Length: 513
Image 1 (cartoon, rainbow, N blue to C red):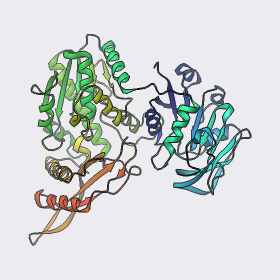
Image 2: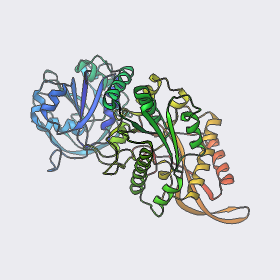
Image 3: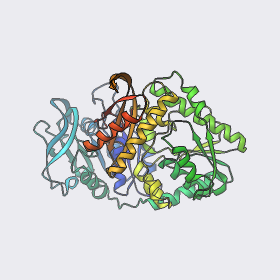
């Protein structure tokens, strides 16, 4: 990468990609790497700054991730966050101990606003804490720059050595002025100018694809969602008719979605693409019969996707590359690197060991969702496609708790269609990151038409988010939810109860499985 860069060293926390996302909001390119990235590799990458992430461990635990002390002598600005701050203190002679009172959640922190890291930050500000250990004493050559009533070193710095640490999480939205702090570090401490823009990313990626593909044939996995649509148009601009887009209708799409995708990308659509639609509903239902475990369902759907592509590739002839719309959160939540695995994604963790292609190309794998949308706009993709709400690769397979059957698919399709229709009719879809209906595996007693019923419960989900790494439950007006519930119970056979999911991410994920 020729542009300036900040690297995030991953010590096992779940907010690691969110840190990278915030750095990119400063128009500075950022990558996440394992905590034990070699010093030689770091020198080769020539970062303008380094950020240590949080993590679940204690610095004193035998299995804890520990980096080399030599990293502090490289002259590169370093910011330690949570565990990263404790590690910095521990390695440089400070004292880390079990806090007498653990801090979790929103906490008022008193800041030394004269410090570079806290420029334009209020003296008392709300920050997100999540720690059991804390820095009891800062290293001898450090200055304490923030405190709380129970945390004597909520932040510290050694300006001469360009070393900074905060016990709280500036990357999460619950830290009210966290973005200011990160921007101060990236722009003022690290001296970044902010030269990473989406137009340059698109141009550079198209050039790289042309160089990689050469005269080879390319097969693109097209779902019709935002990610695969942007990947498809990106590839079309790069290699033109060398690209064939294969749309697999696995029977797990939203109501009418297969026809909608074909209308956009098929022969009558606006794009000059080779387009093949494969109706493989029964093939997927057969593979999923009797399977209830979420990870097993994801991997079955992911592998079957690849097998369908292999079949189509044989019909087309020799195909050199498979393109997928994998994005950064897919990669991270699939447990690559040192972060804990949350779930496998069909286009990352679900790949079989042997794939019948020369190479898999994932042009969006370093982008977050909102960055993918920006790339789509740079490519000239219409707004109604760019702003389409996300839909998981395994589709309704992970919005049906338990075994997937054709009947359950029908139920959730109809319920979801009603929900989305009423949300749009009420005009409350603006600002929602994602909203959908899911079918629980719970059946309960009800009364309909003076008769006893024993049918399924549908759960409604709606969240507000910009990066999809964290999300808040959306407060849908009660009259809208009431109308949706009434319509679903009255119009969808097999449902007698409707629930609303009020959980944020974390602790929940956005999807149900």
